[in-house]
Length: 251
Image 1: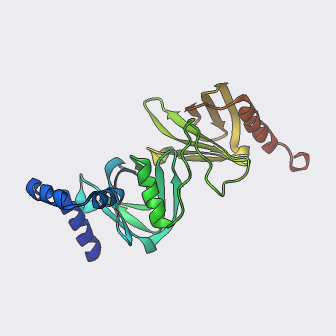
Image 2 (image 1 turned 60 degrees about the vertical axis):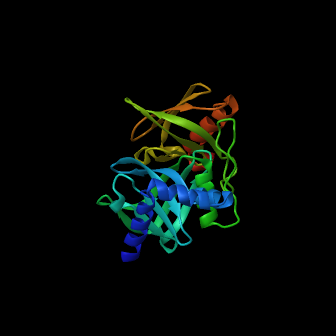
Image 3 (image 1 turned 180 degrees about the vertical axis):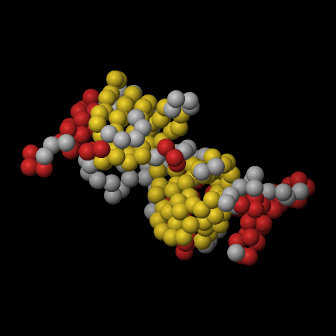
């Protein structure tokens, strides 16, 4: 704990360098040193039960550090050895760190630390730290999410806006042969996972709107971006839902 507090204090103190000293340091740095420093210090937003908190994600050799500029004393230090796994979504610029042991943030225990990176370089930074030598999945330019390696065949992924009665959040809609998942990049409470058998109805009024009605829980109204969902993709989805409701012998 003392080591973590020292590290947080050191990093927080770096935010308050005197202008004259900062100018001297900048003059002394080479271009490559400045680029290296930027690559290990990226703006990020932490999704927590108390809301979204903008801050900075800083990487050292052995730790991930989320620096909370509002409450520096509550900044999070995650040793690499405490990480169980990390899920990446390059197109949505999200990183979800799944922990072996919960960390305390603003009096709340977090088993997963969900981050939305301001730039794609932030996702690449974490990917390189966690899996050296492995590049993150590419970002597609048509608005659909690139399918990460290892996802089931037949998986469809879309960038989406989840519309609330008031406001909205953005994330990724993932449709596998057996499940539908919505992963929010800005509000972890909006994350949902349904089996095809959980779905009462799906409706597509046009390529850019999709309504998901489960048997239990909230109806999800999604606005799809990019090229939207084609007619053939929608037919695949409705066929999967219909198939899940058939008796096993009829499938």
